[in-house]
Image (cartoon, rainbow over all chains, first blue to last red; front, side, top):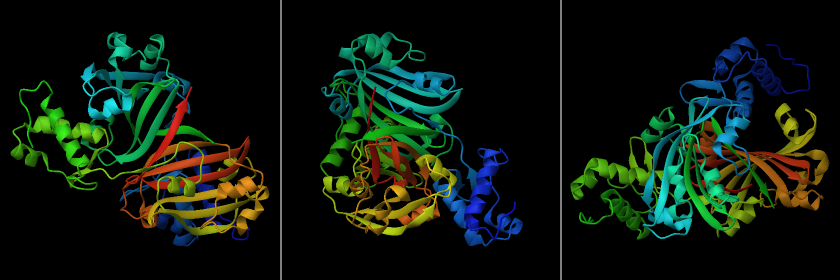
Length: 239
Length: 239
């Protein structure tokens, strides 16, 4: 590891680039712990302040991540969503991975206040509840809970949703999903989520609350939970 | 608190509705701790399983939240973003709150590898770096770090960005922002973020990495950090 003290390039930025290169060359791999500030300062003749600045910048860019009481690690590559309305299977296949789903619940359910409000139906109206664990290459990445008004697509109840798609079934029934409103939040994993998705309690979780429409008809309300360490949500905004 | 054991409505859902009503009537307020499972089971004649199911459902809907070792609380109302490309000040004003900004850095900076790649410029090219703490009604809600290529808008350096807007300045320079690609992640707050945004270390943070374009020209790369407990990101997806 060599820095050039006579270069006009600031030393912290030279160090940033050295770390970046080590990651690109695979010398530091995803999930690896990088040297501590103290270890860096013993290896190269730099102040802890300068080292801290370089590491902070890489943490802010998301290239490194700090884990409390453990040190600083190379971030895992995250599976980012496609910025459009496509199904999970299609999306994972586009990434060159093998999608699979475990159906945890699939049944008639009576709409609660919240579900009814989001779907524009009455409380107590029948909906089809589907809860699925979503996996990519057999790794759990998300837990998705979906509510579809029963009357618009009763045949959804007969579909094997470990393989089939809610969006495709809705399309066949004449309700092709065309637009969705979603709200994305960062929360901490509780015991139930940690058990479902793996990972530990108090890990960051992306929660995505979505209402999907076919033209102006609400066709699905869903609550979706993804592991923060291996998933990100990609969207496009326009004026 | 009274449940009807002869009703066809499941007991856990009756309890959900009681808790919901208490929140709506203001008997339980945002941030309040609700009774524990044990306390509920002493007050009403229900099994802990049934109580747990009701609370779990409300946690999944985001109405309640569990804090490890502390109990279950009524979630704080979050400030959700507008699902379009508008500036921070406009957005906060739309919510009926008073926006303000503290400029922490505002200077010429030489593009790093990452910044250059995102903005389609050369590493070492000049950019204008602006780092701001964003507040709504004097509460810190976000930390935003923005990089704009110097050559497209040198006048940005002379704007007082505690009041002014980067998007408006770009528009005046002939580069009206028209579309943005953003990636949203859930991470944990480190010490630096906790100091900037308040709250404690290991709280959930929404990180939003955005490239903004004027037509097809990249005009800004930004790294944005928001407190998970008071902010959510609202987007629209279409086919």
